[in-house]
Image (cartoon, rainbow over the protein chains, first blue to last red):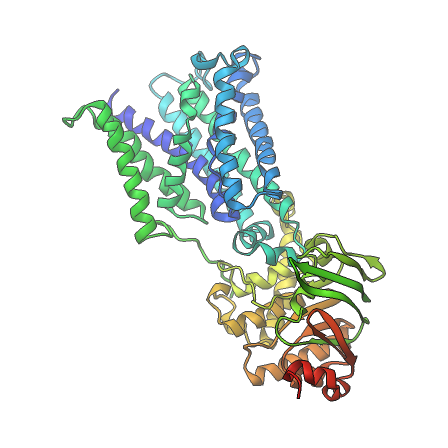
Length: 299
Length: 251
């Protein structure tokens, strides 16, 4: 891989993870829903788009729509236990839901081809765009998706809906006393987050063209958490910055293996060590992250 | 308007409320007093749906409300404040006010995205009302401060402001003036009186200050050990021997 292609690959992965981090931030940073199963959305989005296109022969844009829809429905399903589970217990339940989705992908061979994954996934406009220009084209497509998602999430956060969500995050009982249907609001927040993460899943699928359950291990959720801890919660720009920083460490250490005198295995451990260290340092010395939640000012 | 019949609430073997019955008429200001631990706040928590009752009935505007969730009771026009004020930390004072506003568009994602104009219009109208109220509560200078950074007294004022934004029919206030400076306290009392006269709101107020109670309440209930021990005008209550005994421990 040439250095230019590697940088484009890195940027594209940063972009896809930005969407996942933005979605997680919408749940954790805006609504206060501690989701440890974020990878479930990613997995559902990826598999739905892949299976729709490869197995059902649907056009790619249907793959995208299907991924976003099913992932949104997953958000709805995951929001149901918030009715009876307190924050921390719900967090544990979400951890399980992430694994359940991956295990379904791993074991339901008739649908997902199990551990072999889904292969030969077609790519968007592959025939139209030249092979050399394709990586940059896809990167621009991912960036466009981020801009749209950013714009919509920002609009929602600035709206009365977003204000309600932040109030739930800070003082749930107060919201009840003001007549807010917090269950319904959490549900809507989860659906919005699910749709955004589903989009990321589809973008991932059509980018790497081969997915398997290996792509959706719990460690992915952990990476997304690292992104919002480092980048900052409660604002969408922080999620993007966090995704850039963490992916830089995550991917570039893989690349650096050729240049430093360390075995591939120790590079892998070192990578996780560095990210873990980053989380600890940020929680200790800059708990608000690189970019602080912005205050909404009125004159 | 609010009618409580034979309400009981136990915590283990402790009878926090023991067969309490009382009435709050619309368009009146009713006080609720009693020594610490007599069950005042528990009564508010049960009436507003935050605690489940053990037995008894609660009617609001002729409709039975016990067993409903807190947000449904609030939607019916019966709202409360908390003894220890709650203020969303990372929302500004002004956002806190707008959060409570009764008429809002854009509380869900669809209307927030696709009905932008109506959202902006109602937000603007609510903003004007919010600024008026903040002016009255002497909080307008702090409008862009995070509610989490306010002092205890200021949070009390803010919770009053929020409840006024909500425009309920009846307001349960749990020690609204605790921690508020004396000058402002008088103004607050005036504001409550005015609101009751102009907008025909009913108030049910827990207060420790007899001064506040006698200056605004039409009627006072007294609780002790979860039981209603007296009912009357503030003057009558101050002379009631049972009440004096409850407060002073038997003279």
